Length: 123
Image 1 (cartoon, rainbow, N blue to C red):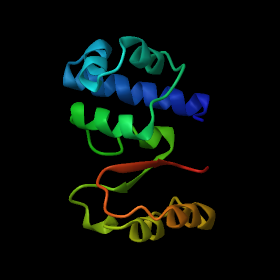
Image 2 (cartoon, rainbow, N blue to C red):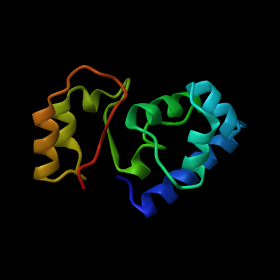
Image 3 (cartoon, one colour):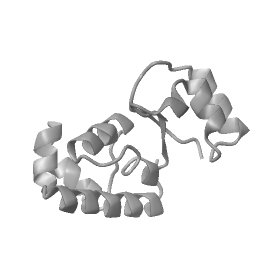
């Protein structure tokens, strides 16, 4: 579950991305196939989207991978075109923000080969 600080940071990043894309929250909801009320809750810092929804929103808003996910504590496992993170093992071991516990969790999950995959940080 996201903290109040994470929800605030996400809202700010989302609002900036919406402004830059000249898209409304309602337009994003429509593009994601969600109710406008769901996206409104993100903007009002009441709830946060699931990692896969964040990844889709980043693509729809044409922002860099991680722009919306990192404020929520989601870790980008494998970014398209990023040879530095071509596997879960490589990504977990190369991310300096992950401690031994976080690395162990990611390695235990063992998800390989997905692009743009996000997982919630265990911190």
